Length: 75
Image (cartoon, rainbow, N blue to C red; front, side, top):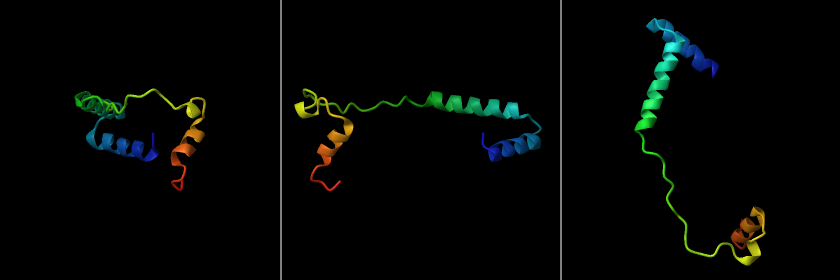
């Protein structure tokens, strides 16, 4: 935990007459409740019909595939 964050939490606990543990529990409850309300992230299906990689790239490493994709494009 960042030292500054812990120091701020200690000061807040002292001002409010509570404990660090109580502040941590309150914070965790708030985070858990907020995340429970969100809809889960769903990645859009961007797949397409095809037959996989073309023959020259079936056994190629990523660097070779990337180089071919950018060939003639200045990268």
